[in-house]
Length: 384
Image (cartoon, rainbow, N blue to C red; front, side):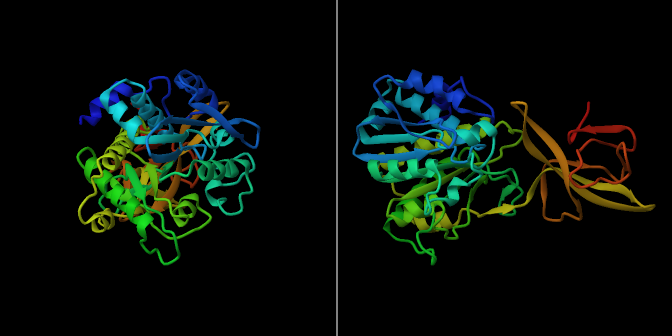
């Protein structure tokens, strides 16, 4: 199966970038509503509709939800790319529709999506509300779960650019987790199914992004929805879309999430369980916080007349300013920074730092500066 070609043929061109709102996807949902697959299953805090899209008539039921965190849109894009496959009339589409019933909530947190925030309109992280169910969005997901009675759950998220695959120096472009179902992090039948499936997906992704697949820490937290559903006996997989080189809009990562989704269903439909799955899963390196967006090395800094050769780092803040999404780089760390990497690295070779106010970068200051008064950096990057 040529996953790259299938992605190119089915990529949904009407949505792109990081800022994806309900207004972005409603026309698409209505277009895909060819046979009453679309329904409204609830409302957000601000009374925005929460949509469910259900398609297929197979005996294996898959529940997928995205944008539980409003500013995590990459998996939403990939989910629509996959739904396009189900509509393309191919033999693959026919096989998937006969094998599975897919229940998709493409945007669980429309208020957070509009505001480009992790939390909902009540400033609650929905992924810490699976027990108390204080929020309408949390209750919607729980109700869909109990009514649909899925055989597998796919919890779709984005992760920050700070994560690397162990200490390899490679970014965690895609990460997975088979959440724990108890404090002891034991492996029961349902968790084992998730583990085997992730191990199989990883084998596929290694052909495309070798060394760039990570695994999240499996500490148990019953307030997290994945841990809750796993504890209820339903195999649950956490997907995390991360950084790919120079892909801050996550259009390349989108492709790998699509590949992961499609390959997971192929594995399930063919009952293609990997050998030695637990070890293969545990051998996926854990995510580690080792990256900055910008790392400047061997820079001469002058602080109160004292010169020092050191390193400093900057990080993008994803900011929504008057409904325009922008990346603004700010200084976040100064020091040795041994063991850290930058998605953009620059060796100053002891060139002197200077900005409009001083000869020393200040934390939380915008990353606009000069080196030796000749090389200008604007928003973290060399101004050519």
